[in-house]
Image (cartoon, rainbow, N blue to C red; front, side):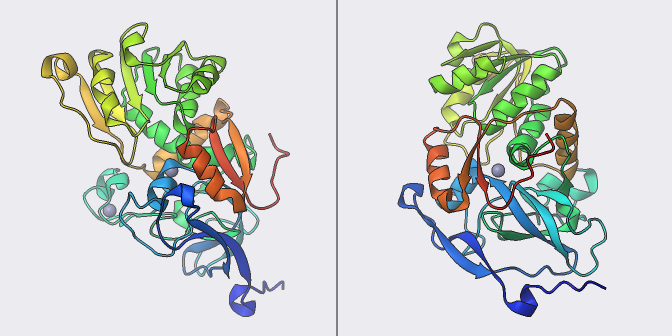
Amino acid sequence: MLVAIWADDLGLSMRAMVLSEPGPIQSGPLRLLEVPVPIPAGGELLIRVRCCAVCRTDLHVIEGELPRRKTPIIPGHQIVGTVERLGPGCTRWGVGQRVGVAWLRHTCRQCQFCATARENLCESSRYTGYHEDGGYAEYTIAPEDYVYEISDAFDDVAAAPLLCAGIIGYRALARSNLPRGGSLALYGFGSSAHIVLQIAQHRGCEVFVVTRGAGHRELARRMGADWAGESAAELPKKADSAIIFAPAGELVPAALAGLKKGGTLALAGIHMSPIPPLDYEMHIFHERDLRSVASNTRDDGRALLAEAAQIPIGPHTTTYPLADANRALQDLKADRINGTGVLVIAGLNVGQK
Ligand SMILES: [Zn+2]
Ligand SMILES: [Zn+2]
């Protein structure tokens, strides 16, 4: 019988980008450190990380815009890797299997929200790279019940952005009530928006993209957006649905004004600057709805991964070595990444696309 000798036996260490003290990303608050390889407890997997995409929420954690939950912390919650070791009692996955780890990593399964298929609102939810260490490292731990299967339709780097940008975009799209064949306005054209664009097009919808970056507008047009422009006032027509991805509350009134009667605006951010006063007649009346999006359920994650594999979705990515995580996040903050930044950590599976 083959017996795996592991960290607790040998005290192995790994490289990780660690946040000891939140601070502006320009100051390079993540430091490359050698830390012990974590040991999976009951129901947890030890995962060898192949790559981890960066997300605006990582920036909010690193710059201290979200309340601190664990210090020091290894950020990162769009993780693609392989199962290295099973903790006691694990039954769902096998060693060597490729899996994905996302933001949601624990729910109580008992509260009124968990009991009604809304575990994204669970009072006791916990998140990867926030409450527990995430994927800016060579290894990470995840509860086996909260890990996703990754289809062979995607190589590692292409799969990583689906795990937050994709899942949150998917939930935001559901929250925006986009009718089949309808029209959708997207505000901001980062990681989530460019995945949502592909899904909406596949569903036969018209897509308008509003973004200040000329490069983002060009990418949107290249990807087949029906229109891309700089402000909501220029939209070619009113939309059935809209999603604001940019963390900018000042976009809300114009986005509501750009909706048809009965239209819905979904706010996809976890953090947003103040929303200016709304005018009832201009922004809300005629049954226009304004809805927020909070994380996702595991069902959202599985549905997105299945639909993405079917289309198949091809996220645009820019790769960085693990040690350059600060630079990747600086580029994200300055809007210099077209698509999604992905930290590459271990040997990649690129042969299956
Ligand atoms: Zn709950
Ligand atoms: Zn995220």
